[in-house]
Length: 199
Image (cartoon, rainbow, N blue to C red; front, top):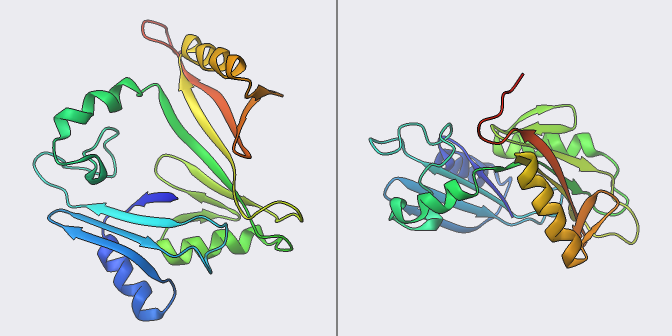
């Protein structure tokens, strides 16, 4: 599932339904939250898209720009799960790559479709979210459409090395990446640990 956040998911949903561009399979509008899941059939990349929005308020003034923002799926008690989010603060999604269905090599058309459906900025065949990028690769016979790879940024060399050590011990580290369930997980260093300079 590709969970995206926008300023007005309800307005986007109404537009997509009116135009017959995507099929809603789940929606939840409650208080300051709008959550919509769309059927993946007909959406290139084999990933179920979810588009959500949170209305800005006193406790969440800038939902799209706040790293550890309240999130409806985690429950209403933000303080109860905020510390868990912060403990994983050294990790960040950098990007994902979706494989198209076998025989489909038009990765630029896939990015264009996502741009048109969900309003994500596009540069050629790459979608630019606020915090990550989404790309596409041509489909290949014998490989399913769907998630091909994920790139995770890790802040702090010690934390990155610890993840690699655990992956080696679990037998999922090879050729400079983790491979689980047919998906390649790439790890990159995105900063320094506490107390180290950035120069």
